[in-house]
Length: 171
Image (tube, rainbow, N blue to C red; front, side, top):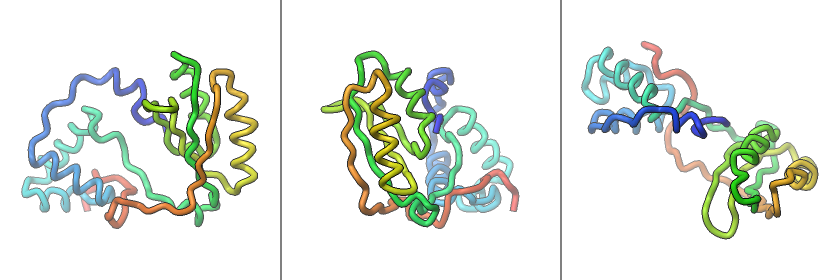
């Protein structure tokens, strides 16, 4: 969950991406388990070149990591919600740290508009979700108000067969 955040501020500026880099990113976004050999073949470069490019993209912070897409309901997290929060001005870093520690927190964003923070959570059931909102979130002193939007159904927009694993394997 701590992907990005202050870590991004410490990275040097990313080098410009060429068409091969962009093709590699598209492949890995579709299938994070793609092997170096497969990536190299699909973008028409050597395996060494593909490996070096992926490492550079990781070092530059362009690729932040690899993960699995999870069916939360089948994983025992049948209740999902987007929660909007209004927070005390200039309390983002403090609030973010507390939100990252919440069980089931999947995504946290500082946003503009009618509220300040958008939080996505996955919990086993509505009772656990209610406790998370009423007990945990609303007890954070910097949280002024919350609004909970239940997720009835989700659609994964990433058409790939999977995005888990280590693309730097050589199979």
